[in-house]
Length: 229
Image (cartoon, rainbow, N blue to C red; front, side):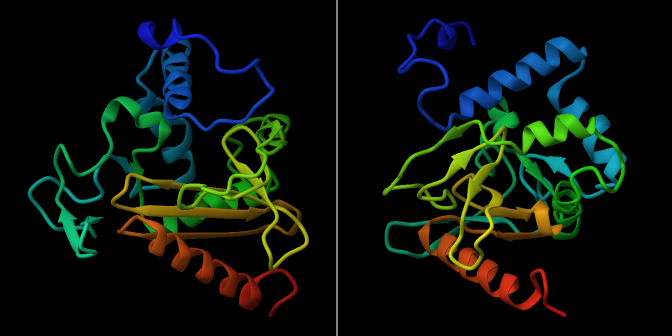
């Protein structure tokens, strides 16, 4: 943190969008200083436990030495897949945990998404309604990104921890975000105005996985989205 904070800014604050894992790491360090607990302890106490996310944890989804959950896969140069067992190479380094080293079941993931879709209309009250609204409000336009990473919208805006994107199958925008450690890929798509949310995950990363997830998201919206039986 000391080395990073001494680096000059690449642009004036609030003028350009750039996603940064280090930014989330810094936010986690701020929470630890203010809360007097580790980032992991705070997330468990303030999010996992109140929502009943019993499967949620940190690091690789499988236990060390066991195949008790789907393991992530790296895509080799020849296109074949390499399973990545739990251990030092099974997830991103713990130091960037606030940028995304949480694992949880798809049902618990859906519960988290549903809480956001309700925008405070359903419990538990993890934060004040105005705080949640602020998290969902646009901060900056992202501008066009023709070479966007898998799971990242090619255009749109960014709120505090959520992208805001208009997808081809709905005129109304979605709150959305994807995360990948190059071995897994997960996406959350929320439309609070219609109390709709969907989560998707796969235990392989890369462009093909992203294309498949986005295609499934579109089909789910068309079949089960607002106004459908």
